[in-house]
Length: 319
Ligand code: WQD
Image 1 (cartoon, rainbow, N blue to C red):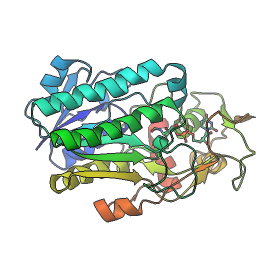
Image 2: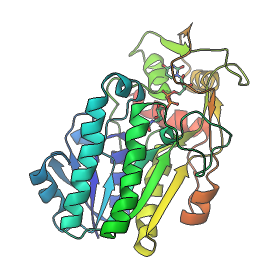
Image 3: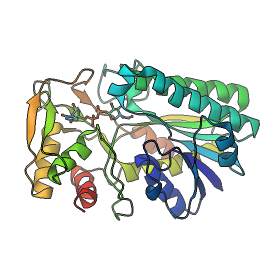
Image 4: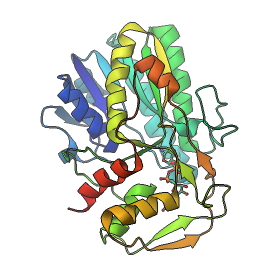
């Protein structure tokens, strides 16, 4: 079966492409390389340098394809509040062009990279899929709008889709087959690793007065290889079902200081940090059970304990 992966040169995309190739899928990657790395794309996949915003690139990418896994998007929540137009165009317009190009060719299987950012501030924890949807950043809004479009395309065009709401993606392929570092990372773990490896002198801890066990923010970190497995399972799921919207999380949660302390113990390096004010829009805690993912997809995280998350990331940053 031939599958198009948009954004397949990115961090989650390249891990997903690797997993699909391991399962014997015929994979085509469409990526504009604005954030991704050509070298991260498995040699078994066909690579197209192009964009979902370009109809000729879409025509090339969709040729002979039965299903699409759509990860191409901008994802920096803070940046989306400063430059929303960029997110409207790339995330929403890009997705709609892709969906229309698929509909024209009667390709009706779609796995969508959504996010926990669709929920906004948690009204209860752990989050489940029925939690109110009130994104607090424009990035999360674009992903939620796309989820809504998917329902319409389901009703009107027979699209079968799975929307996967990732929590905090982290870690690297445990077999170290993927070693591309994210450029200018915004997320906690790559920033901690940049300090550990000497790429960065020190980091900032955003607030230590939250209502958590040590005052720093608590999140649900999910290993990127676990996310990759979930994409393959979701692809299989929509062969026999019309739609699925599911959280991908672990139910475990770790504070910023938990991550820093574990990183110090694994790397043997001191993680130098400044304690600064809270970052705007950061909830104290965010975590979810993945019981629905277990029921629907028979999926649960197996690489996502804090030690594995940090060890697999350090294998890459330590090079
Ligand atoms: C984690 C914790 C920070 C950096 C983001 C997106 C979200 C989703 C997942 C894509 C928080 C603290 C961080 C630093 C710090 N992405 N922190 N110093 O904000 O939970 O979620 O990634 O779908 O939409 O917003 O992740 O890694 O930025 O932060 O103290 O330099 O680390 O305050 O408590 P976040 P994060």
